[in-house]
Structures are given as C-alpha cells and as structure tokens.
Amino acid sequence: MATLGIAAPTPPRGPNLDSAPWFAVETALGWVGVAFGPRGLRRLALPRADGATLAEELGPAKGPVPLAWADLARRLAGYAAGLPQVWPDPLDPEGATPFRRAVWQAAAAIPWGHVRSYGLLAGVLGRPGAARAVGAALGANPLPIIIPCHRVVGARGNLAGYAGGLEMKRRLLAMEGVKLSALSSQPSGVGNQRR
Image (cartoon, rainbow, N blue to C red):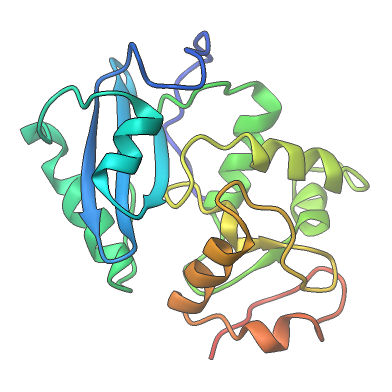
C-alpha cells in the first residue's frame, strides 16, 4: 500500500478556508482551489467553472501560487489534461481521524485508471462489512484527486457518492481511461478496469 505523509490530526477550520492560505489553479477541468497549512496540503476544492465561483466558496485568495507549491500547480494542470501524476506532497488534511487516514491511505493506493469497491477497501483494512464506514470516510476526504476517492465505486461497479457530484466522478474516471459501461457488469469487489 502506498504511504501518504498524512500529519497527525489538527482541529478542523470550518467549511471555508478563512484561516488557511490558499491559491487557485486553472486547469482543463476548471479552477481548482488548494489550501495548505504549516505541515502540508489541507484541502483541495474540486474544479469550478471559473475563479469567481471558487472565490465565492472559499473567500478571497491569499495570494498567487507560492513558489514552493508551483510544482503541485503544474501537476494538477497535467492531471486535468489526462496525464497520470504522482503526489509526493506532505498532507495535513482537515478532519483526519485514524480510521479516515487508513481509508484515505487505501484509496491512495488505487492506481490511475483502476477502481475498487467500498467493500474491497473495507476488507483491505481488515474491517469486512464496513463498506458504509469506508464511504463515509471517503465522503469526508478534503483532498479529492490527490487522495483519489473517485476511484471507489459500489459493489456492482455502480457510481455511488462523490462530494463533487456523480458527473464529476464520471468525468474523472473517463479521463483516466476507465470503461464506465463495463463497471456495472463487474462482480462484487470490482477489479482493474481500463480501456
């Protein structure tokens, strides 16, 4: 399983990023907002149609992309252009309980262009039957794309739950080459699915 550098839990800062420095990156999918704290990335806001929409949700930007995070901005743009990326960045996600960190770690191990079911991740974590708890942990993921919760699907391969909406989940999976029409015919657990 891939290892994420997820920092110890820190107190949540509320629904907006009022106290966390953040910047916006224009990508082929839309404007992505990224917030960071002293120990790493705190939150990623999924693509919005324009920077103004993102600013309405997150508040005024705290400045341009910091030089230290310019490579992250480049990788986000590359991802949105359909190029596989790696995310070696230190993470300091909001709301990172021990169980959520374990679930996010398992989701981060799912390779580009592949999917796994909620139940399969629960089994990987030694918690068979905890598929709903896995779904809830993924629903609280503050770093979508970097922690690729869009790669987790229902037991029969159906698209289920995504904070950015099912259309965004569909777009991300299609961009990664996942054959969406083949997903619903997969047996429970859902394995590797690529074109």
